[in-house]
Amino acid sequence: MYQMYAYSKKYGNADVWLLYPVTDEMRGHTKIEYHSRDNTSVRIFFVDVNNDNLEELKKAIEEG
Image (cartoon, rainbow, N blue to C red; front, side, top):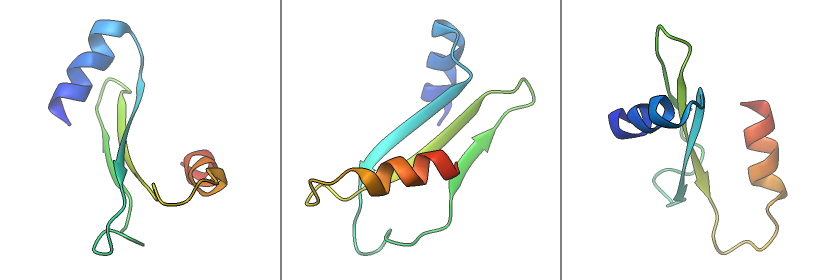
């Protein structure tokens, strides 16, 4: 999270996403997010890499 926060500052982007392959353990997990006092957000999304349809990921990202 800290590294992604540092990248957001270096490249001037206040919204950073980390994408990881979903595991059975992480399926349905509550949101994992970091929001700094300077309006930077780092969010983790879990992707089903076995599913060729990325609509689920798009929906999850839009719901933020």
